Image 1 (cartoon, rainbow, N blue to C red):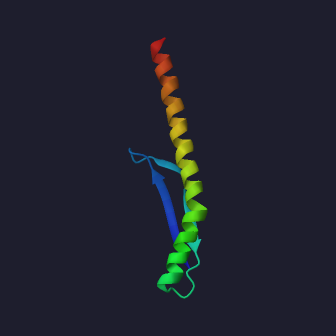
Image 2: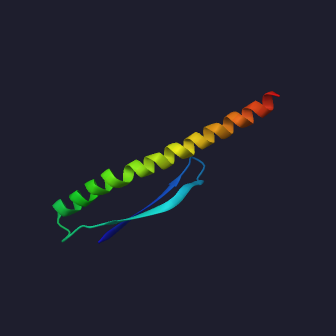
Image 3: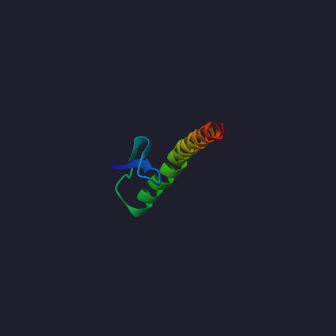
Length: 73
């Protein structure tokens, strides 16, 4: 078994969300088994990671708009 740990950061080095840890079932460790495990990881995990990134970006945009509105008053 292998593990993948993902911690996302913004451009300023600030952590986005929580660190994610995923386990890969790589069987006997042949190239075909590793490739299959990575493909399964991508199908199952990347949509979740993408949602988290988009939610973070959306929250940041909302924060910027609120700050911009206050300056205009």
